[in-house]
Amino acid sequence: MDERAVRKARNETWFRDVNERLELHAGLRAGPPPTFEIVCECDREACTERIEVGFAAYERVRRDSTAFIVVPGHADTEIEHVVARRDAYEIVSKLGAAAAVAELSDPRNGA
Ligand SMILES: [Zn+2]
Image (cartoon, rainbow, N blue to C red; front, side):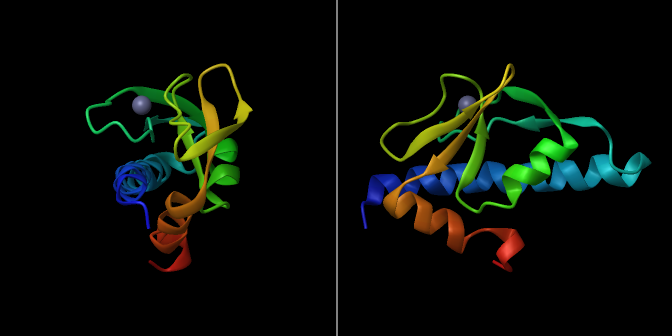
């Protein structure tokens, strides 16, 4: 496996774990909210940008282990490609080794 791709993918799966907890927390407070705030799921360790995302839209993305939500322009074309563009964010899909890491570490797959 390409080590760089794996490391980048691990960064992104870490942010996904954070967002899964943010979603849970938002939902526990007052039931599923129409929107909530997540962190950008790009591979830049220093990125702390926030994204307002619809609850239903977030759930749709999470059904695909290789899909991530990033701030427009934060996609890393070495390991992913943009599959959808929204006003506040882009949805990216992992490629190759990065996709394998994303699938294996998906908490919704029991990882
Ligand atoms: Zn980012």
